[in-house]
Amino acid sequence: MIIDEWTNTELEKDQILKIIEKVYPNSEFATSEYFDWQYRDGPYGPAKILLAKNDSGDVIGIEPILPMKLLIDNNVTMSSLSCNSIIDPNFRNQGIFSKLVSNILRFHQFTVFLIKNLTISSLKMDLIILVNYHYL
Image 1: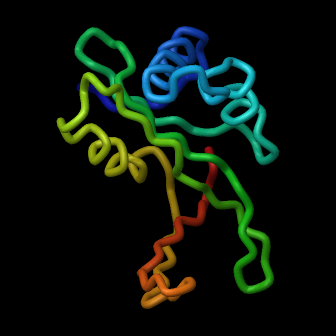
Image 2: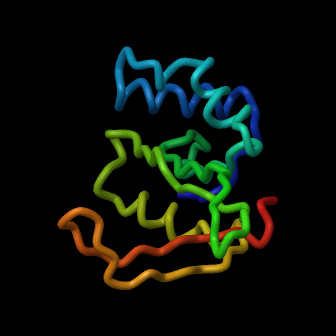
């Protein structure tokens, strides 16, 4: 398995859409228009998508990283949101998601903020925020 970065080709887009269709059949998430809106034409620039590819070069998993702005200490800071992770159902339980997530820092430079003991409603958690030095 290879972890690589999306190069914004139609072939990769088609492979990604096939995986999305498997996981979310007949959903707007699997349409070309939604893909372009979410990943190519976002308000803060195009997304970065990490790809897991099998030995044949087919995309079997994705970890999208969407640019976004956060307000930190009254300063607007470019940041990222890692979301919409999808692994082809035929390749699950092989550690692919973990490999995708662990490679995020290989492709991007971040400042890491850790908020300990955060309480939202009755849910207590630690929150990690990754803020970009560079959204390349």
